[in-house]
Length: 402
Ligand SMILES: Cc1cc2nc3c(=O)[nH]c(=O)nc-3n(C[C@H](O)[C@H](O)[C@H](O)COP(=O)(O)OP(=O)(O)OC[C@H]3O[C@@H](n4cnc5c(N)ncnc54)[C@H](O)[C@@H]3O)c2cc1C
Image (cartoon, rainbow, N blue to C red; front, side):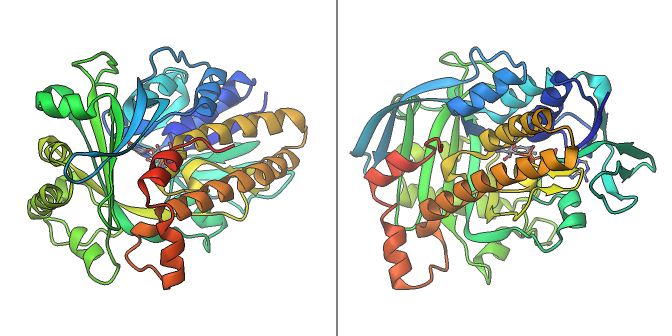
């Protein structure tokens, strides 16, 4: 039986593990976090491609999320600028995690153990040998790196590939529907809604409740508010924790300065509709996340495959992060089934998925360009502005790419 090591037990790693096991591989999954990741994360958009990938991984996809029939852009005063009937299912990260985790037996997962490096540089035709944080060493026919934006595996193989800050941050959070006023529920709960102050974008949609509930009264509302933040002053100011340290790559929610949160909520009252402002106030623990672009020229290094956020991260405007990760896993198992030689299979996988990753990153860059703090020339700003109109925002955001 062929053997694989998967690094990272989030959505990409779980999908790869489930699909490889389904194809007859023996898999060991290493996740550096010691406890389950469930309970973390916020909301996400689903696409038909994701539903197909989950079905292939063996997931039961009935009631995966909340179906939302309409999109709407609100002006600051609450009037409707644009609306579009477009059915889409929104879910919670935690629900997707639980669905995929159920496909991987616990004995396959080594929790609290991090990939620490390769014992020797991986090479085509040879088994890969990896070292781990607890001192163990493993060898296998294949190693799949699903260890996210700051991938340790990628850093060992392609250190020149680095995420680039996009020039803006996303405030995000989820709030239980029951905590919202009847008016806000009526205006927002059944819609994918937007509000677009100059160079900013607020959006929100209903997602499954904490236990995956999708019925009225038990759902939650997810918001994402994109705001420019330049690297010289605003980004470090926002990302300074209550411990005085600056966390430019991302700050843990409990370290967020309450004054920065209060300022964001006050800005929401000034810039957004009353209902969106209420969402920011009612959300118990808002999070802030700098937005990055990441592209990789290759996703195969002999018997090692990069996948998910370890290889490509697009700005969230396409809502393709999870879909892309699950599709990477599907293409990986298809390529391995089609080619007896693992390195040849991975070269085939890399060609297909680099093309797909480049396409999503490029499109998401265009959609988000008008929010960048440092928009380059006037011509670039004018090009960026074409995606700022209510018509463009409503028809291009989170639409599946083929
Ligand atoms: C807790 C969490 C919450 C998220 N919430 C959302 C959300 O609400 N909405 C959304 O659109 N996207 C969210 N994402 C991102 C989304 O999951 C990804 O865009 C997509 O699923 C692809 O992710 P990934 O599995 O490739 O990488 P990630 O989801 O980043 O996972 C990487 C995993 O690798 C592990 N890891 C890192 N280094 C090592 C190492 N050296 N050894 C072993 N393990 C390692 C990490 O602990 C992590 O579990 C979230 C990610 C995480 C981890």
